[in-house]
Length: 271
Ligand SMILES: [Zn+2]
Image (tube, rainbow, N blue to C red; front, side, top):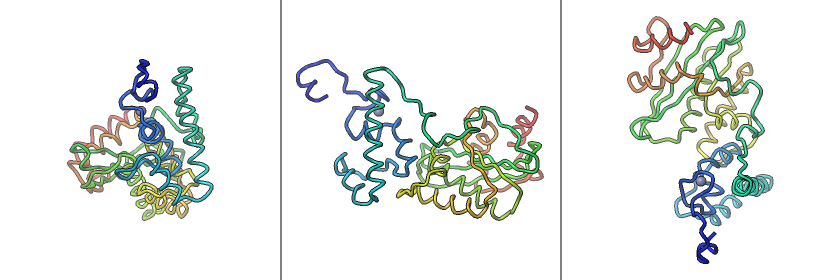
């Protein structure tokens, strides 16, 4: 690209995938937001220490990682570069949904009742105050769709959205652990979290630590499934998380649910 530009060939310096930032090697293979998901899913993440360039970041990774992970990093770089070339030369977009680890039943567009004698837990996260605070909302409903319990959590710090969502899932699982129940289905609209939970790869980021904690609880609980659900299916959980700023760190059931949340609960139940 630099050589073409110095020879005055008219090419855009912008990343052809996001068309938002300059296409450096580091941007193309790591920091482009279209690429984030790939690195999160394999447990490496894209939190690159400041002052690192592509080479120094690779050197750092290769110092830390086991041999299979080194091979995976090289393969993933190749796959990302290949996908970028497919787009540039053939205008073909590689579908995110084709990523292995996407299970049948994921990606529901509408909230659905859980099977008889089971419960469904919806987790949602949101950032507030320009990302300086984060909230989590968790809702538990029975097989008839009736609201049983819910809670909110507020974190007074700037956090990555996928990390907040993972923290929300961890809160939901810890909550389930304290209340042994029948089969439970936990739903989140964060695909990164769902796929990290299904991945065997150990992650070295804070996100990875939270995912490992979730996996430990999941092993103990056994009868809990995690599913990815589309944002459109998430109205109530989304309203609860928005309300977490007004009702931080609060647990509630049908008798003491904050009155401003009642309309949302009723609206979704009615349909
Ligand atoms: Zn980009």
